[in-house]
Length: 302
Ligand code: DON
Image 1 (cartoon, rainbow, N blue to C red):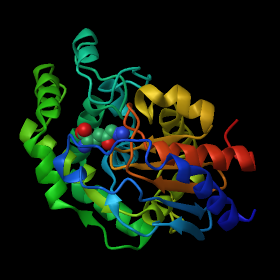
Image 2 (image 1 turned 60 degrees about the horizontal axis):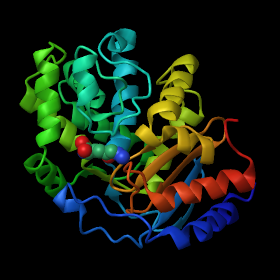
Image 3 (image 1 turned 135 degrees about the vertical axis):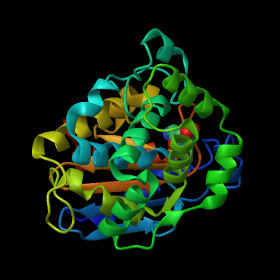
Image 4 (image 1 turned 90 degrees about the horizontal axis):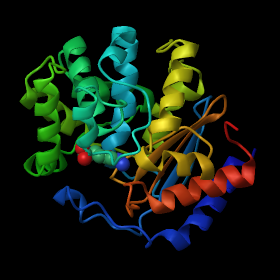
């Protein structure tokens, strides 16, 4: 397929949506992002990258990092994680607290903030450094220099009352192994990783290759890769997961920095970035571009 032309067409379809969203401002360091920025990259299973717009510009990956914490935790620690976090869509906003009490301190899924804190905690126990484990993985898959934007991490920590509340609540149910402060530090640090569409499309390649990394080694079994893709499809865009599946038809993981990483199993991974968000915290132009791409190409999991 002529991927370069197809993603250029998808970008053209997304341009009218560039100013329809709102930049995340509950993390003050993200409020200055330019809503007219747009980038899109497709990395094929062979590692060939096609990109348009600002596809090589680093942005704050935020919740896209939760895909990597989940994967690395499953790869290193196995299925035990599922005793501490569920895998059902929540139907609630990503930072909601209400379900956690009704459901005895077991978060609905690993992508809402409560679930992601449990995953970070587990990854930290398994590795001794959850955030660095994620950075290392991204560097290895993309070949890029990747780090945490300390200003964003500090900015979020300074305004992180909801995440602090969630972490303490999890601890009250005995669902954290590490001190609350440690878990939050690592969570903010992996959310504040800066990476580009190019880097993330390459880093998501293992899901398109059914669990095999860029260097040919296996990270997840084929069955585990299917399961991670399934959780992305059902929970990766929070209370908009139904709408995202309806419009895009691919597993996808969004972040409030405006990025979305989507997987075309057997074909490649696509990352799109534009900072204007909808009410559910997903990039408006990003969803529009992915919608245009899968509609034009017929490439979807359905
Ligand atoms: O915890 C937070 O609120 C952010 N660090 C991440 C949230 C996020 O990216 C949700 N995604 N759309």
